[in-house]
Image (cartoon, rainbow, N blue to C red; front, side):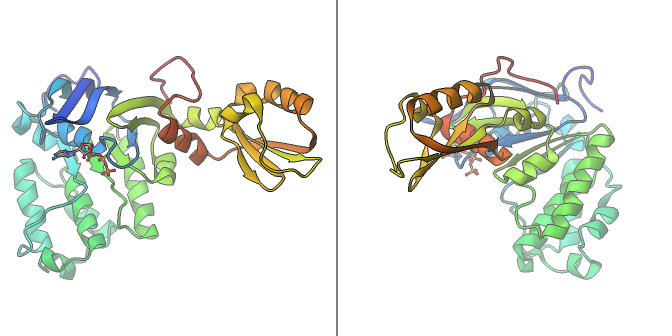
Length: 316
Ligand SMILES: Nc1ncnc2c1ncn2[C@@H]1O[C@H](COP(=O)(O)OP(=O)(O)OP(=O)(O)O)[C@@H](O)[C@H]1O
């Protein structure tokens, strides 16, 4: 393996990438250790693809520092290539080449033997007949399968995947999840971008949430699960609908007739319930844990760390 293997596998320090006046990503700090599946999550245009392209050396940063296995992905591109797998969001292929020829061409660019090519084609159900067809005739899902095979075929130490399960049917998604689990069990490192929340919950140990080019938070999925908001539902005795809720307005009230639902951070539930009962004609009240999706969605929307627990980076 090239470079300095003692430090983190991926290190982004104040990474900034501008496209003219447009900010792709600004001041991003992320560290990923060996054996992690790390997720980069955020809404459209958040800067995920920009970050990934900087990581694999396709874009040079406007500021800050990128290191993968201790190497600079732009300056040390050739040294890094055999140890790096990359699945772009949009795989651009030569339409006249067959699937097999495409895999072999990409292997030459990777500059490494491809001990896993056949096994991965079998597991992802790319048959020899399909591999003999020009990729210009491939469906979206077939292209994605080919993209996944080439990202892992040379058994790289680090794999960077942009929206990896896009276009895969549920069975193949399962195979992909198994593949990720095997990679990390073997000490290899995966960084993936996604908007698919269940995929992230299922596969990642930690996630960085980015929004409008900035890092919102880095959290372990386990911590997000623990910190998830409580859903407080109230029914009012007088049956009246939407009304001012005072301090409770900050918990995103959603009204439905004479009922309202609030999403309250866990450490504020008891005082919240106490003041609601004291100030409003409450006839019924329930409290339950909100789904993990809501925890993510709040971070997406607000751009603030809803849960405010000091540490930026916590191990899973
Ligand atoms: N080649 C480019 N030229 C100019 N602006 C760009 C370019 N590529 C990306 N951007 C801008 O940079 C910002 C981040 O885009 P990026 O593609 O990194 O986001 P993303 O999180 O991957 O989005 P999506 O989920 O929609 O793929 C956006 O404002 C986008 O318009």
